[in-house]
Image (cartoon, rainbow, N blue to C red; front, top):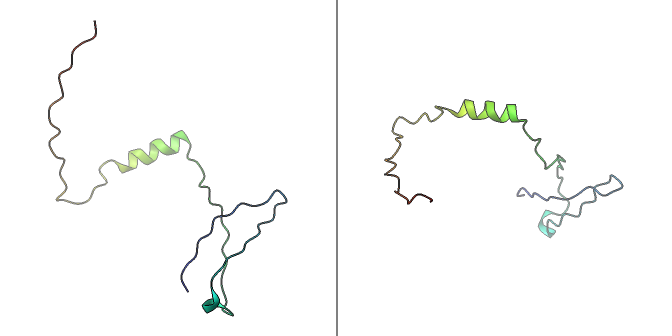
Length: 79
């Protein structure tokens, strides 16, 4: 049996109603249903900053290199 993911919304009565068509080949098989929130908790600004700080220097591949960035385009100034 392949994994099936269905996103649904809990009704205003607090009850989740599911109808999952799996096909006749799956009839009379035991299944496992896992219910978890689809929304990830948002990070605070402090948590986001800490996450960004932990990514500094995180590329462990010794063959990785930063390619040349080229020259900035000269633009006309505003009058």
